[in-house]
Length: 256
Image (tube, rainbow, N blue to C red; front, side, top):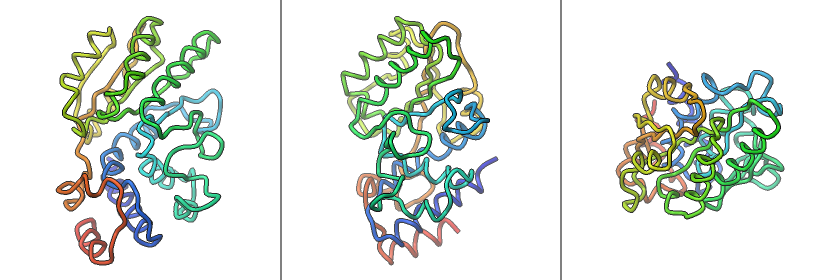
């Protein structure tokens, strides 16, 4: 459904990074595009805008994937292409990580891994106390699961029955130290499913679900650098890197 748009978003990311001559988190961004497109376009209640206090909210605990979110923002007209090209520049609203004082639709600043989920869970609890019906969506990297603060918030969310929390695990196999993620969340009494993180229909079905009385986690199996052979084959190298003229030609030939 969004395949053409996602390909264009990948082109825009590579073109912007190459034009600016900057290093950027491109391989993790490529893994998140289907997730962000489905969330923002099909699942989240943002009819009154991403800044409206009644809208659902999205927190990137894996904050370095913000570049992918900005690319989707540009597609949806939330930001212009001109602003997209200000990424990482002085006084831009689009930093490497989200900043609640500047970045559109951002209620929690992220970047230091392990902090986004605890903050988001705390806010979701406050919403419950206030009688609000917003949903809180949080993306978390699989490597980030090694942070103890993640599991403290997982325990709290289950204890408080925060069914307004939906956590999406970007499981791009960045870590070898976190086996059976699905089983772990179920052991902590979360509703949990595992899906192909690049299959739009699976994402749409899973993310639209809202269990009653329990927090919910979707483990999305993703490929770091998805859709760009050079990124996929050397995803660690391309975790944060600039694009040379030679690499740009190769990548554009593949994407176009």
